[in-house]
Image (cartoon, rainbow, N blue to C red; front, top):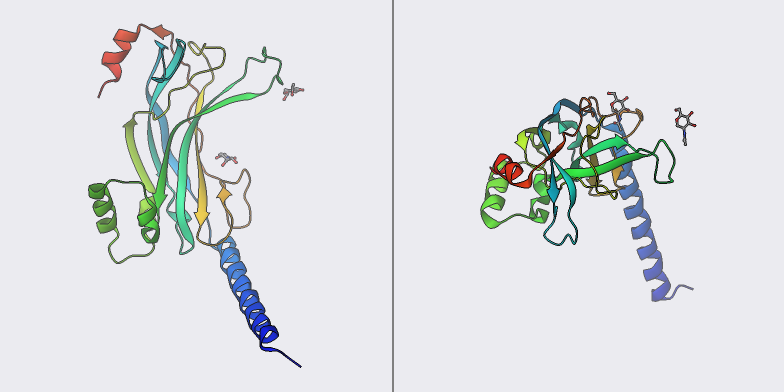
Length: 230
Ligand SMILES: *[C@@H]1O[C@H](CO)[C@@H](O)[C@H](O)[C@H]1NC(C)=O
Ligand SMILES: *[C@@H]1O[C@H](CO)[C@@H](O)[C@H](O)[C@H]1NC(C)=O
């Protein structure tokens, strides 16, 4: 004989099973929408190395690099009805000199810039002031998906983060490249990064690397300042 508790349990159990199945279907649906992002332009526009305190809380003076860059990328295919937000970031990478005991082929990698692009339905999560928020909402009035937000065109962008190295030396470093990365945060499902290889309908990020460049020699801080102010 069923007591009402057991009945409630069964109903609730059925409900969670259905909800779980629906969530799985939504998450899996992402696999069937093609992701074909590409980068048109990723290049440095101004690179400087100065010696000083890279952050106001730095305790010692060290060399740091300020890398300005331009980026043109089309990430619009990442914005589907299950996309909550896309996190985009640019790293600078160079081969490690290998002296510091780690494997010789290690790569130094540091983030120089990042940005979060929300879907219109997730705009309330964006970390913006009221004016910028109103502008953002107006830009997608009435739309719940706005792939055009994935089209990035950024010119001579100042880096958010300066590059340093534990050895305190970055001047004259050769073979540095910039690389664009993204990750997609869905409403339902797991966080996914740009794949290293094509995965079903998800293509690798075409043109994700810039040309190789070298960090210049050390510049006096005062000269550097006038050059980087904007
Ligand atoms: C570094 O890469 C080379 C060639 O790719 C390889 O022969 C060598 O074993 C690697 N060294 C280490 C420490 O991984
Ligand atoms: C970067 O681009 C190259 C060629 O366009 C591709 O082979 C590689 O898989 C890409 N890497 C990532 C992490 O997207």
